[in-house]
Structures are given as structure tokens and as C-alpha cells.
Length: 316
Image (tube, helix red, strand yellow):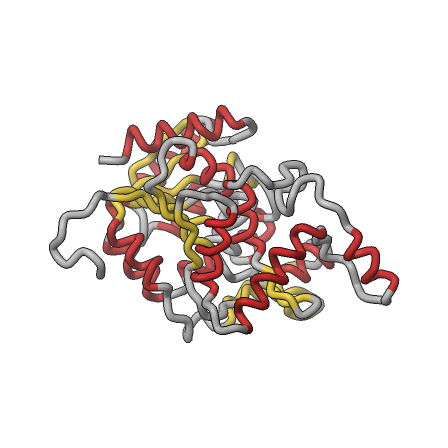
């Protein structure tokens, strides 16, 4: 690890997926710059010969104030001339990438083909977007989230975007997880941090692929008393996206308690919504400290307020 007995400023690290996490990341970034964001790569996808990294891009676009907030992904006010031409050529266009977004994917792909790692490329792109905090892919290897449905298994992007999440979910697999090596920068970020936040992304498709990497889960377990998870569930409904559907398919209770059980080995604190206060004792029985507040982030002000309260309460 990177400490080797030396004194270093303690950092904050956030484990983040895409649309469910970007608001939390933005809130923290508005407070300070000594932050690492370790990002999911399980939903990365090859399309038109380009390597697309939805979660990395959503985080970077969000931090660069480029994100299309209405959709929760892509670049705001983007144009779609590329896709219109692809339609003329008879190609499928279910994955609605804009023209500026395409430039990101094309540049990334060319750099990969020239031997650069995903970590290097992400750091380079953050510099181009004038992003001060570090965005770190959880691994430079390939891990793929596959959704098992009644019509067969398919990539997460195909299930959620192409098929609109309509097929019955039978299960979820993280293909390649057993062979993946964690990014050393991600491991160091966790090791060196005095506060580690599991953002309110989908526990199975945004956070799950990262926890499926043995080194990451093991390092988090070592730092358990520094880890705070934010519930992505209020009542029995997800704050955003198909989280509830995935949890049900995995046989996990769709509640803050269900999420707490998933994270029990890697976190000692969880923040739930005030509406779920009645679950406190059950969650505490898992040896997890419970803190309740309003966790739905609907404005920039609410993003900043939640991040600020977490820093004040847990960053020591």
C-alpha cells in the first residue's frame, strides 16, 4: 500500500455507479477537492467498434457540468447527427449516444488501441474537462454485468436500454469477476481514506460489480469502521432506476434493511431516509450504526446539504 508509515492527508473516497451516484459525487465535490471517486466498469459496452463507459462518463460529465440532468446520462444539448446517419446505414440505434458523447467514446477507444489503460485515459479526460477530483476505474480489466432473464442472459445495457427492462429478471452475474485484478489506485484510495462512502447507486448493478472484486471487498472490510453507505431505497421503492426489480430477482428485501444486509461485511454505518426510521433496530442488529435524514437529492442544494452533513458527522 501507499502509506509505508509516511504521514499523508486523509482523503475521502466514494464508490460510485452512474445516475444513482452522480448527485452524491457532485455534492461532495462542491465541498472539497481531496476526493477519490472509484467507479464501476461492469456496464461498459462495445458498440459500433467504440468502448462506452456509462458510469465513468456520467460521473465525469456530472463533475464537468455537462450532464443531461433530464436523462441522467449523456451530454446536455447534444446533437444526434451520428445516430441519424447510422440509421440510414441500417444500424440499430437503441443506444442513444449524442455527437459530443461519441467523441468521448471514439477518443477513449483509440487510446485503448494505442496501449493506454482505462485508468490513464480517465485521468487524461478529467484533465481535459478541468475536473479537480480523481475519478478512478475500479479495475483496468473487464468485468461484465449480465442479466439473466426469461429470454436468456444479456448485457446490462441490452436489458435496460434495448429491451427497456421489461423482461423478467431471474438473476445477475458478474462475468469475469473471479479473474479481475483491482486497480492499485482504487485499492490505495480506499486504504488512504478516512471516510469511504458507498453512494446510493444500484447495489447489484452499480456497486455490486465492484464488491465482486475480491481485493476491493477485502480492503473495504478492513476499513469497515470508516465506511458509510447511503441507502438507495425509501420505503419499498428505489429512489431511481430498476433497483427494486433487481433486488427482488436476487431474493433481497426491497428496503433499507435489505441493502444493509448486503453491505454488512463492508460498512459500519448506513444513512437511511427518515421515513424508514422504524427499521433502525433491525439494522442495528447487524452491527451497523443507523443515521436517518432526508436522502432524496432533488436539487443542487440538497446534494450539497447531504454531502456536507456526512462530512461533518463522519470525517475525523
